[in-house]
Amino acid sequence: MEQQGFTLWFTGMSGAGKTTLATVVEEILRDRGLKVELLDGDVVRTNLSKGLGFSKEDRDTNIKRIGFVCKILTRNGVVAIGSAISPYREVRDFIRQDIGRFVEVYCKCPMEVLIERDVKGLYKKALAGEIENFTGVSDPYEEPLNAEVVVNTDTETHQESVGKILARLEELNYISQASGDQDQVYSEEEEQILEDRLKALGYL
Image (cartoon, rainbow, N blue to C red; front, side):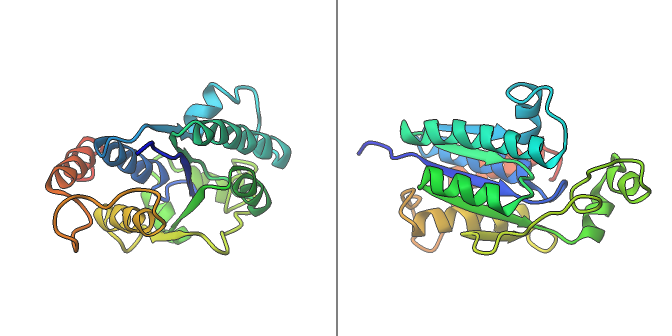
């Protein structure tokens, strides 16, 4: 059966775990034989959106550019994974409507945990007024109201969050169920991929 494309969109504040989860999900979907492309917000800013700042207008332009690439990929039978803070609800909803086959994953995490995790100290600098237009501090983050998946990255393990995302994609019939026990979220091979990837990222 020919693969149908869809967009899996990870949103959440800086440090909430978007890139980590998106990278692991990408590898598992590839292992299931799907064509997958990951568009990470930081990488896109250095290439596709070079020169854009952090005003609302520039942020919206950046997110719309990622959304446009995801739309083309989706239309051509690819699983497009977008991972970007994407703080404004209106733009995320615009992309959802534009693409159609769209699954929003909200990586939810309390501010105090984000500050604890922040090895670069960006939140502390933003709170001290040293960084302007910082999402969640001096710039708003508008939470999704009806995300298909909400992962609580302060209380869930990476394995639990990835399992929740895959289960929802199966429920929506965007991907087939993993072979093996019907109650298992992952196959044995996928468990190994997940473990290897988390080790490589320094989480295990």
